[in-house]
Length: 384
Image 1: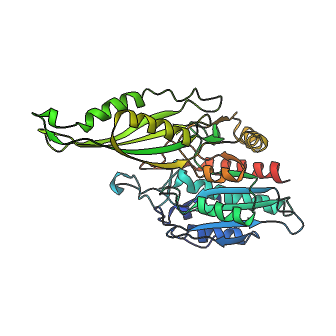
Image 2: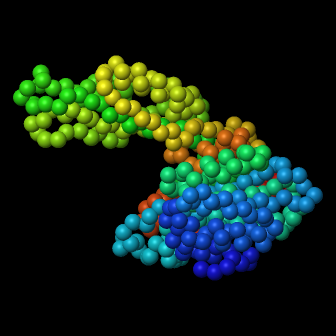
Image 3: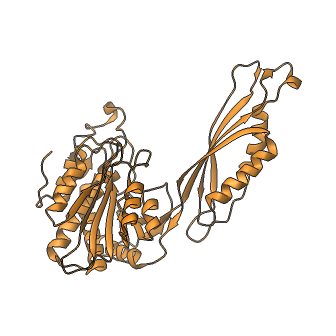
C-alpha cells in the first residue's frame, strides 16, 4: 500500500484499495487514500465520522462556477468478511490478477467502482478544469453493516447546510452478464417485522389447560402470506412478504406458550410502510390476545423518473460497451435510498455482480477501465 499517484491506472488503484482490510465498519485507510488523491485534483475534503463509522465528503467547484448542478459519486469502502481463507484460490486481501481477472474481497463490491470513479474524475478535471457545477464524493464505511452512521448521517448533515445534490451515481455492482447491461434507477422499500405471540404453556396431554401459541401463529400466518398487497407498477413488481424465522417450543411434551416470528416485506411505490404496519397490526389483533410487534424500516422505495442522468449513463454505456442498458429496480437496498431524500436523480452502475459476497470475488480487468470511461463520459454529458 502506498500514497496515491495521479498516474496510477484504475487497476493499480483498485489493487491498493483491496489490499486494505476494511471489513465493515473498518475503513483501513481507504478514505485517507481517496482524500489525498482527490485533494491533488483540487477537491476540498471533509472527514465526517460518526461513532465507529468513517465518512468523507469531498467536493470540487471551479472558481468561476456556481455549485449547481452538483454531481456526486457515492460508494462505500467497507467490505463483508471474506469467509474461510482456505476456500479462496488466493488470499482475499492480496489482490491478484490471473487470466485478465482481478481477484480480492471488494473487487466488485465496490472498490473497483471507487477506483474507476477516481480515474474518471482525474481525466475529466484535466480536460475540463472549468467545468460547470460541482463534482463531489460521498464515501462511507458503513454500507455492508447496520447503515446507521454512514451515508444517512452525512446526507442529514448536508441537508442541514443546504447542500443540494442534483445527480448521483452509486457504484453498486449492477451489471449481470456484461458490463453496463443493467443499471438501477430505484429500489424497493424494505420493512422488517418481529412478532412475539404469547399463549399459555402446558402439558400436551391436557390441551384444554393450555393455549398453543404456535396454533395461533399458524392462523395468523395463513392469512398474512396470502395478502395481495398491490399490483406493483411499470417500474416495480408487486409487494412481497417472506417469513424468515419462526422460533418456538421447549420439549416434545410441552405446549408452546410463546412463538417468535420474523418477516420482511419488499414494497413498491404503490405502498407505504404506515399502511403495511396498520394492515399487519389489524390481522394480529384478529388472531392474538397477547402479542408484541416491533418494526424496523430498512429503507423506503425510491425511483428516478427524470431522464437526464439515466439518458447520460445509457448513452455512455452504448458508446463504450455497445450495449443497450436495461433500467431496473430489482435487488436489495443500497445507500441510494438515503441520497434519494435530497431529490437527486440516482443511477446505480458498477461491475458484474456474479461473485459479490462470495469467496474468490473478482472483476475483469478490462471492465475496470471501461467503467472509468463510462463514468467519464457521463460527467462530460452532465457538466460540460
